[in-house]
Image 1 (cartoon, helix red, strand yellow):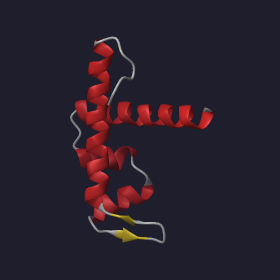
Image 2 (cartoon, one colour):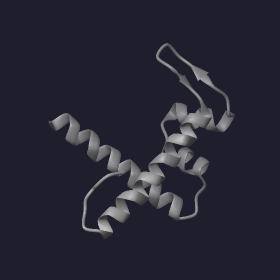
Image 3 (spheres, rainbow, N blue to C red):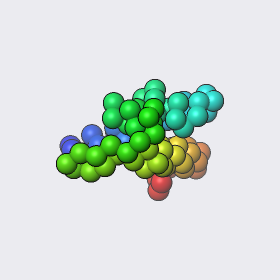
Image 4 (spheres, rainbow, N blue to C red):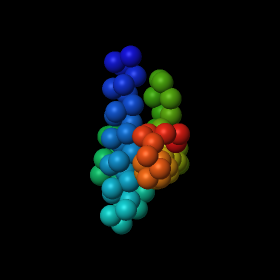
Length: 89
């Protein structure tokens, strides 16, 4: 159970970071360049697809993931307003 709890905590922290930066006026790409992983930043800067043994890093997939983080953060905040945490997101 510890693993899952730690993962959920990290996931919620990421959602909050993305939400804070987006509501501060940063674009999706600016958020990625600020808090993204090294390979995510490289992919966004050059807008090319990187390939490695495990998978490929596609800039559009990265952008989609960060948009999803922002959407999930908004859902969690709405859940909080209803008295649920984190609720369904």
